[in-house]
Image 1 (cartoon, protein in one colour):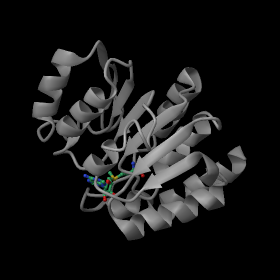
Image 2: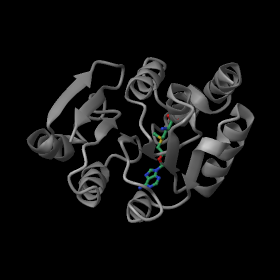
Image 3: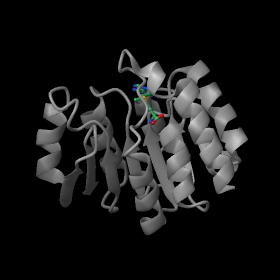
Image 4: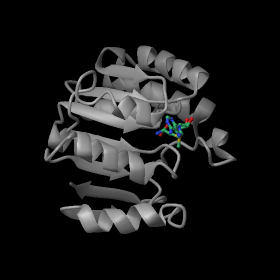
Length: 189
Ligand SMILES: C[S@@+](CC[C@H](N)C(=O)[O-])C[C@H]1O[C@@H](n2cnc3c(N)ncnc32)[C@H](O)[C@@H]1O
C-alpha cells in the first residue's frame, strides 16, 4: 500500500507537481514538507483531518501515508482539479479514507460538525486571503476542542498572510514555524 501511494506521489510530482506552479496559484507542497506532514500524522494519529486546498492531492497523499486509519476531508473548489485528484487517490488505493468536498472552503467549514466531524488536525494550503477567516471559523465551530493547525507558506507568502499571522499569534496555545522552503506553521489551538 505504501509503495502504491509513493508511486502516485512521484506521478503527481512529475505530471502535476512542481511544473504546474509557475503562477504559484496551485503550487503543491515542496519536497521537504510531505515527510513532515506524514510524521506529524503518524505521531498524533488523528481520527479526522480537514485539509483546505486539495490541488492535485500531493499533500493529501502524505497525510494518508501517516495513518491509514485517519479520515481526511479535503476541500477544492476547482472541479476538474478535484476530479483529477480523486483519480490519483484511487490509483494510490487511499480513496476509502478520503472524502472530497468540491466547494469553496467556507462552505465546507459550515459542514462541521454535522457532515464533517470535529477535526483533530487541520492542514491549511488554499488561497492565502481566506486563511484568517477560515481558521477562525473552524476554531469557532470546534468550540474548545484542541486542534493541531498546520499552515503552509507562512514564510514565502508572509506579506499576504500578515493579518492572519498577527491574529493567530494572539490566540494559539503554542506555535512554531518549521523552517521548510515555504515555512510550515505548526500550532495547537
Ligand atoms: C496551493 S494549492 C494546494 C496544493 C496541495 N495542498 C498539494 O500539496 O498538492 C491550492 C488549491 O486550493 C484551491 N483553493 C484556493 N482557494 C480555495 C477556496 N477558498 N476554497 C477551496 N479551494 C480553494 C485552488 O484551486 C488550488 O488547487
